[in-house]
Length: 342
Image (cartoon, rainbow, N blue to C red; front, side, top):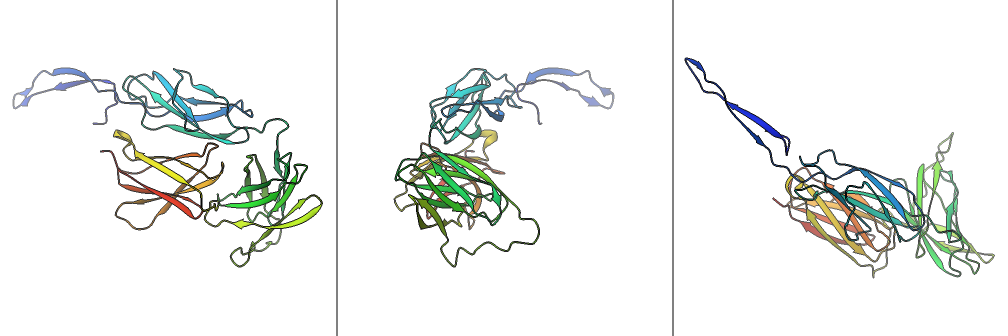
């Protein structure tokens, strides 16, 4: 009947015959309370190189019973009960890295099946390696600059484009901890950079070229593009991997494991996924799904690898179904079948 959980209702019954209508037989009953929805609207503040403060707003639907507390976690760690507080500060985080945060709601009936999740990166510590790039117009090269990185190292800078596809720029760092590389943006928007194996992050903006059309971007399928790196006063040309699968190509030894589950009750259409991979932090993973009994996978979204190699993802389906979820990482992928909970 669409009644609100945990609410009281009065019911009246009448008997009607040819002589008229009887007095009402009345009774009251309350509907049962249920588990609450997840909190809403995660916000971040107080971001440092090792800590992040995040806050949230209470759920709109409490399941008909007052919220008794919240449970938070970060980077796939254990749940932490924070009582009725709607803010928490995560500490001892890896610097200049992306981190995943989640919050669950609790009432006397139980804990929400769904969770509120959010991503935020920590700052680089003072006097630490610095990754930067200058904003340019589309078709003009931006200079990727590495400062105070480990001497005589090779860093891979993962460039995430506005359409979430990715490219790699290999930069050789000289004995003074400095190195440069170039990247040519082919579309307007914000580009994010993450270095590996020493993770640092940065971003730059590419704006459209005014006036005549500058022409199409180079066709990476016909030739291998290059990037020029400067090290110790010499110029070195190294290949750039153009990634057309929206993810970083990785070595053959890359490993990945995934597990999945379906929501229960009112959340029976939800799909929850988590896993771990040996890929570098910041690597973009493509999520594709296929309903059992149908052909072909469709791209459902993306997620990033956290500092500790973990990743997670969730999706809302229209109804409980058997769903195959395939996580792709370059030329490698893994698949899991998620069965609905009736």
